[in-house]
Image (cartoon, rainbow, N blue to C red; front, side, top):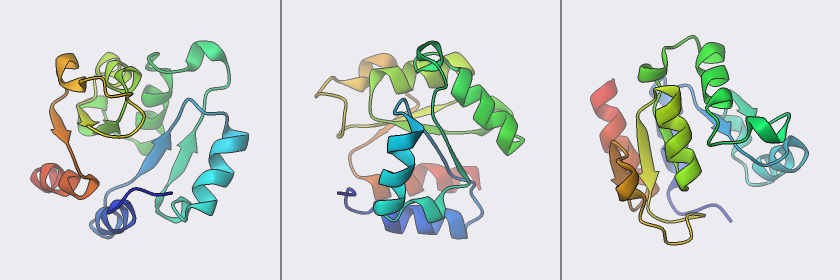
Length: 133
């Protein structure tokens, strides 16, 4: 299931000109069909999955690869994640991170990792990205 507000938020961001990608530790052969079945692929410019275990987050390699593919500097990309490995990888890549307080984080308080912001609802992401426009 897709969390409430995700589709609408991705649509709004896409219509506003934001390039959106998915960077996941899940194997692409599982992640890509799941994203398609959930109806999220249409909002994504691309999805990156690790080719090796070593490339998995918190290694910043996939985030750095995404910035290159998008043609932006790391500080120009905002990484949104729901786990400690997401926040650590974003910071290691030089990207600002927004922590999602729900999801796969197993109730670990991500605020202790000093994300630039934390959201409790996905639509709240818009208010942080509106400043970047």
